[in-house]
Length: 201
Image (tube, rainbow, N blue to C red; front, side, top):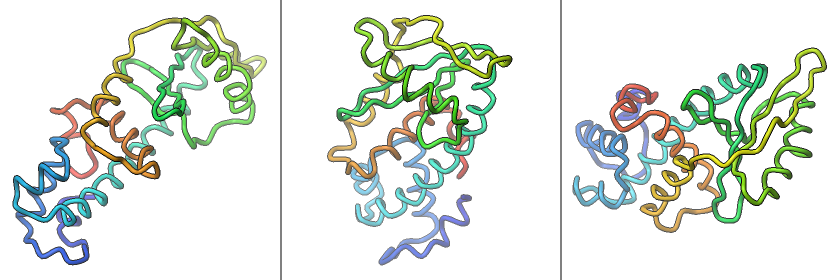
């Protein structure tokens, strides 16, 4: 979504000009909360939240596209690394590949891989007392996946997401996945490059 498209959105009761919309846009890029943005720009929090919701939806849509495309390639490489987050009592699994983190949620995967993840890897990893990740190998001749070993690795993404979510007090559970995906997107593309990588730049 471009800035021009954003300024033309029919946001209910939003009586602001294009420059104000652009300012909201820029505050979102800097990862400011709606409360701070509303105070800084002297615009109602409800209006800011309305625009933030649209921008966030666009960002997460782009995240899902990139995530799905990259995962399909990784699954058929020789090895890949699976890790997990624990947020609000939920386990959320992701793949770390070349310093990029890819979310394993609601993705289109083969039946073999789905069974492997659900019946073998996920249970084994959660029950492992010392490890937070598992290295997996794919055998193209048998079309099967096997756990090579369990590892205890750094948890930078986990720490980043927990730290970031603290500033969004009272996140509705229905919006949690969206905030997690946005967090991973922001972690993959740091503050400087997100201005270029985000779909609304």
